[in-house]
Structure formats: C-alpha cells, structure tokens
Image (cartoon, rainbow, N blue to C red; front, side, top):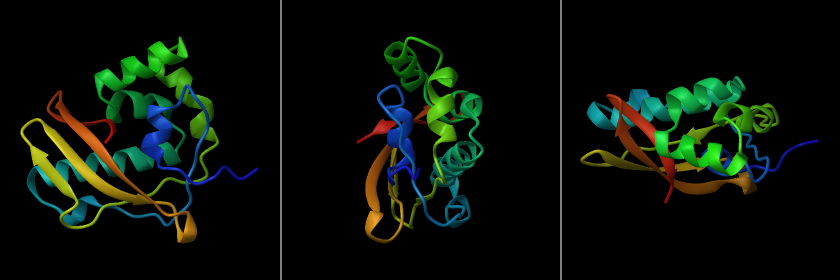
Length: 142
C-alpha cells in the first residue's frame, strides 16, 4: 500500500496521530548555504536521511528538539523512538527541497520554507528550528 505524500516534518510532529510519507527525488540542501543557514540545511539533510533509513532513534535524538520529543512522548504515551518506529517504516521516501533565500535565522530560532513530494503531490511547509545543544533541531511546523 502506498502512503499518501506528506511532509516528513508533519509525520514527526503528528506521529502519534497517524502515518504519512512522501515520494520525490533524493538530494542534499546544505551545500547551497553558508553559516547558520548551512547548519539548518544540514539538520534538514539529517532528518531526510534518518527518515529514509527508518531510524527513529536518530530522528528523536539528532533531529528533533527536546520540546518536540517531549510532545511526541506525551501524546503517544511511549518513547519518541517507539512512537515513530512504525510510521517511519511506512514512509517510502523523504525529500525536502530548500532553495536559496528559504532559510531565515532570528537569534536562536530559524525557519525554512520547504517543498516536499512531487508532481501534483507537492506540498509547501515552513519548518521551525531552535538552536539546542550547539546545533539546530526541528521544533515544528509554522
């Protein structure tokens, strides 16, 4: 069964509520940026890679903010990795395209406008990030 396209970040944020996936081409965003923008793009690349690998432990420990992990844990009534394990296995691919000018840094917070999916299934979202533990972590949508 093919899972309908949906932004991987929405999968993570709503993992306790259902399964989602996306299909598109593979790629890396970080090479197009410098400084803090490159760090945010690297987090996006890690998120894509960890979702593709179905590695819920890495998604929860490396890619998500503490606040988002706590939210997933609370809503699922189990660990973040346990909550994401099955949904990540159902994702057929994960791709987030981030273009020049799509990342904005504001102190310890950042946003990135991304496109996921392909063809008529393309979806545009804004991801929010927070600087945490010396790096950037996905903190949600919006």
